[in-house]
Figure 1 (cartoon, rainbow over the protein chains, first blue to last red):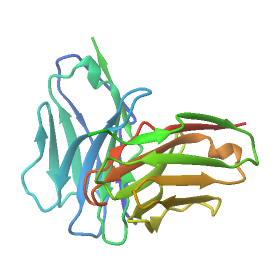
Figure 2: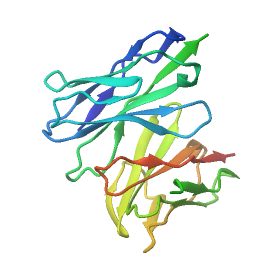
Figure 3: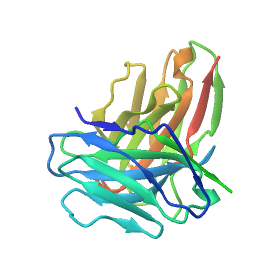
Figure 4: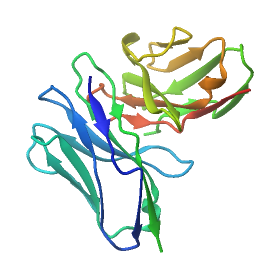
Length: 115
Length: 112
């Protein structure tokens, strides 16, 4: 069974600083997809970034980037120049398709950006 | 394009009742997935539909069921509600399941 582990239940960062959220996963699949989703307080879940396992290059979306280490099964999210609006629960998620047809989520990391 | 919509947004039910939740996917998306979100268990997969066929089901009792219509809209039904069914129910749609899933705002169900 695939599992996703986020070892940091809560983190905080000062505005304009950089923070890294950790995620590890376990799978025997070779082809899969990894995601970071953001869920602000009482608001909708939105996609932050997506990484295909067959791509060696780390995905980047503006201030958000990932460090994907396939051999170590690690997928961390780096947020640069943190903004107050980045305060949210961040979920790491895994999808391998095949017969699974589902996203498997970690427990989440609550990130608070302080002014 | 309009995003994923879910109705109703809030529901209060009593134990033993049944409830039907609705999800309208993004236009052109044929895959619809449902998730239950609770503080204790986090996000758990309920089921996934593609072209009216259920392709996968999570580890939930048979009281949880769903269906998808020819226009890709989906409904999920929970019968004989229990207190533990109180949760945020999220619907997500995608072109296919390996594509990025886009989430709706959720339906918050409270069972008293």
